[in-house]
Structure formats: C-alpha cells, structure tokens
Image (tube, rainbow, N blue to C red; front, side, top):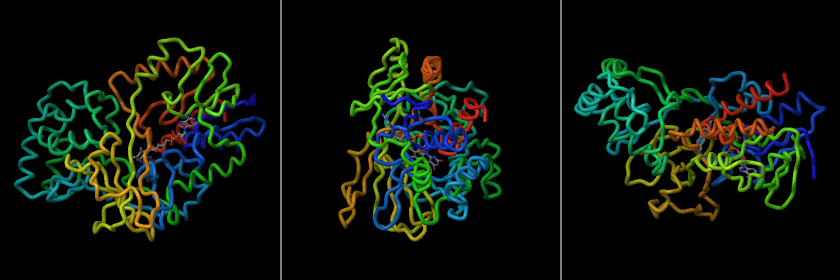
Length: 415
Ligand SMILES: Cc1cc2nc3c(=O)[nH]c(=O)nc-3n(C[C@H](O)[C@H](O)[C@H](O)COP(=O)(O)OP(=O)(O)OC[C@H]3O[C@@H](n4cnc5c(N)ncnc54)[C@H](O)[C@@H]3O)c2cc1C
C-alpha cells in the first residue's frame, strides 16, 4: 500500500491548489492526488466542440474580486492570456429581456409593467416589517413581492434546483444581489441599476482556451503526483486509508477530501450518526448542451424562467470565447425529458455536444449547516479534512475554492 504525508482526493480547483502549494512550499512532504476522471479540472473542465472550447461543467468565469487568488492562478496562466469583460447578463421575460438582477433593472421594462412590479414590491413582507421566513421559497416573496416571485424567481429557481426548492434555507443568501426597495425606485427614476450587484460584475475568460486550460496547467505542474481513473469508493477512518474502484489502496498522515461525501460508498470506523449526516446532504446535477447557431445578442448569458423551456440558462459562447460560434444550454438533469427534441446530443459533424454532470450544486437545505458541521468535525478528529465545493458542501465559486485551499494550506503548514 502506498503511504504519503498528504492524500488529496479530487483534482478540481481545490485539490489542484492544495497540491501545488505543497509542491512549491514543502518539498520534503510526500503527496498524491487521486482523480476519478482521465483529466483534471473537475467542474471547471473544457472540451473542444465545433472548433472552440466548451465549458462542460457549465459557464465558468474568473471573478476579478480576489487579487491574491488571481495572482496565484496567473502564475500558471499569465494575465496576458485572459480577456476581461464587464458582465452582461439578462433575464428572458418572453416578449422582452431585462438586465440581471431583476429588481435593479425593472426600469428597462415597458412602463405599465414597471408599475405592476413596483406595486408588488411595495407590499412585500420585508417592506412591511414582517419577520424574515426560514425557507428560501417563502423568503423570495417576502423580499421581492408576489409578482417577481411568480414571474421570475420561483420558476427560475424551481428549474435550476429541480424540485428541491422547498427544502432550501435562507442562511446562504448573501450570495444573491441585494437591492432595497428604495434602490429599485431610484433605478426606475434615474433609468440605471442601483444596489449591490451580483458576483462576476467584471470577470476574466481565457483568450485562446476554455476555462479548463488553467487547471490542466496546474495538473501538469504536478507531473506523476496525480493518479487518474482512480475513483475513491471506501474510506477507513481508523487506518486513514482509502480504496479505489480498481481495488488499489492508499494510506496517509492526512487526507484532504474535495470529492462529494456521498460519492464514497463505505466509511469504516464511522458511526451511524456520521453516515446519516452524509446521506442528508443534497445536490443537483446539470447537463450542458451545445447548439451550433450563433445568437444575435451581446449578452454573455441569459436566465430563462419560462416553464415551457427545459433549460434555465443560455451561455452565449460567441460573446466571451474569442473566435467561437454557437451557445450552450444549462439544464437540471431532472428536467432533461422536457428538452426540445430539436436540440441534438451531437453536432452536425457527429461530435459529442451534451455533457451530464451528476454533482453541480450542493444544496443549502435547512438542516445542511448542522449536518456538514458534524461531518467535518468527526472527520477532522480522525485526520481527514473536507475542502472545497464538495468537501465542505458549500456553494463556492472557483476563486473562493482556491482561497479556501490557500487558507487550509497556511493553517496546516504554517506557511
Ligand atoms: C453551472 C456552474 C457554473 C459555475 N460558474 C462558475 C463561474 O462562473 N465562476 C466560478 O469561479 N465558479 C463557477 N462555478 C463553481 C465552480 O465549478 C466550483 O467552485 C469549482 O469547480 C469547485 O472546485 P472543487 O475542486 O471544490 O470541486 P470540483 O470542481 O467538483 O472537483 C472535484 C473533483 O473530484 C473528482 N471526484 C469526484 N468524485 C470522486 C471520487 N469518488 N474519487 C476521485 N475523484 C473524485 C471530480 O472528478 C473532480 O475532478 C460554477 C459551477 C457550476 C455547477
């Protein structure tokens, strides 16, 4: 059995960052990364489809907000290799489009529509000092009013979270844009958005490649310290070992796990309480499907609340990936049966055009904070540390994931 100081499960942004920090700063430490796929990058991978890169885990943009993170990432892929864009994202309202977030862009609607939305927000629970609800689904109407809830937020989120809307809590909502009623009124009066804008207001995307190129370069820097096609199936807390689907075993002083807890089918040395916490974690999956037509829009992406369409988001590749054409659809796996038959799974030249990802969004269910806290503390006491989107079951973007890996490395290695 191979034994190392650090065994890192998963070669997505979290695992790649932690491993590269070890390699650069702790030459005396032995480590190995186990990755179930044939290549690194996780949800941030890209593949060439119809002559240009396609982000097969969904549209991925590097936020400009974390300069220390970006400085580290640019050491693998220099800043000159990236374009910078100011976000142009829209909401498809059927007969017209408005900018995102909805409540900051009502001013872009026909005037009679503006009046209906403003009336509805004016009597939303938060503006009448009613208590904040515990469930996300109730919070939507409380914060934004009945009309935005019915026309956009409930159908859009219902599509994206594929039937799990009812189980979500409200403790994670700092992720969403925050626009007060006063700011919505000001935006309608002055015909421009007000309030806190969402993430990726300004972002980087590679000039010549897909987002996946960055992570391929980070993987390359690790050489043979990544083992591919190594799907971890079992974890033994007492021995600090893991077993892969092919029967290979690895032991470590410390295990850093960035893979979904639920993807591990057997935990030896765990109690029933731990197992039931793992089973309580929920997630959704998403399909990415390429379409060859080039859309006549300047938007980078568009949110689609209409129940009649299976997909919830359109990514207009031709507007952020230099020299490319076409766009892709993002659809919750539970809604694939509703997919319009005119969107094929292959391109006209027979290339694979549809990519299904089982784990895309860790769900912020009402009981999640308590469950993941128990999982992480049980594991940590046994030398196993959860990191990243799946290890911590947090809705992190890749820049935050990298930052988490940097923080963990600094804490463990004092560097
Ligand atoms: C649709 C969508 C859009 C997004 N858009 C953005 C964006 O615009 N900007 C941004 O910064 N972030 C975005 N994100 C978030 C980004 O994808 C994550 O922050 C990032 O991928 C998290 O990295 P990670 O290493 O924690 O997890 P992952 O990327 O999921 O990596 C986990 C790795 O573990 C491997 N693995 C899984 N199970 C096993 C197993 N049993 N054994 C071995 N290996 C295993 C996987 O193959 C994978 O390589 C988006 C995510 C989604 C789903």
